[in-house]
Length: 467
Ligand code: NAD
Image (cartoon, rainbow, N blue to C red; front, side, top):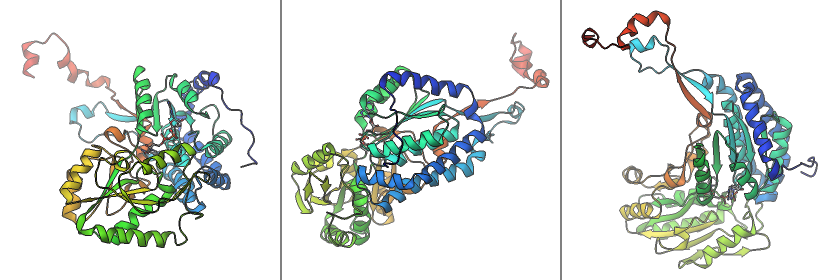
């Protein structure tokens, strides 16, 4: 990290100039060629590869991420996305010919052309700073767009390394990183973009959507969770405990798709809590503090917010609860709560808090889930097929995993996104290409069909009406 050249950060007053450059480059049409896109993707791949040690260091500094996690869900994640996109891009950019077109209309060669949407703005979040910023950028490059990336200021070291990668690897005229927080984001939102891709909390999501609406700019919003997990008495308590605990240890629970609370049928509650304790001991034999694989809370503000949530719960702490403001340590903390009104359920913890709410049956769990959030980002259900089918049929969510925590979100080629309040639009795999692509329907009417088209021209005589 220390070897990185110093950057000249773009001042707020220079944002309009950067925007103009990025828009101008798009209108040069150079970014549309397949060769150009593939070259950028290849170059980005090697830029990331070369910077891998610095990325791991940055993630350690920003979030205390251990190298294994950082490689798995950040470096390797985006490298795989680039490989997938590069392998499939030639196929994705090809015109599509819909097969449900009536014979005579086929004469006009109806097809869907894949046009880039234009110059786009990507605003990233802090928790997976690399994948949540470079992931959408890969989609934008693949689609032939130009882009400005504004990484989260809350993971400053990762933001810095991304600026280095983008400026060293990509066409500077087409891709730029603007560092900063609210003033820079606000200046960027003052510009007219062809699409805005935002990842972060729903309050800021509302600001983005409102601002974008002023210029009818389409937005992709990847927002927050309050995701329920539901465990029936027919579930395997050990399996459920291990899988859900993993979701709260990963990135110290700062994962948008990790469960926010767990509802457990009363009959299985003692077994589940026991298995949770066993799993915790297995995963962290020496405890969480000082564990090199267990991350820290990103900053003091977020740490204090989490601490405030824990202090205001009416629930009973079952295990954990230790914290350290100086090191931003927050122990994975299991709390048994007795109401969906508890702050640990009503608010998104986005951290290693594990509230467990006993329920009488699956119907009560479904009612609670729908009452807490009509459209969470994820939903996790453990039980027999009849029960998990019922849960899926009677709830809504951006995505869902049966018998697991957020597995659906780890499949690189499965479209990922929210619904309703948890977001709009999706990306990953082909969806990342589609996200930045306009499907432009085109026909070409040959001269020789004129006699067939005669019927559309006035005057509309009796003879024409009979045809
Ligand atoms: P954050 O603090 O990193 O903010 C996200 C981005 O919003 C940053 O780039 C920041 O500069 C920008 N921002 C902040 N205030 C702004 C403003 N007034 N105007 C314009 N831009 C502004 O991250 P966060 O929002 O605290 O992230 C946590 C939330 O994001 C959680 O709710 C989490 O569930 C959600 N999240 C969702 C996903 C997803 O893929 N759906 C992924 C990660 C996080």
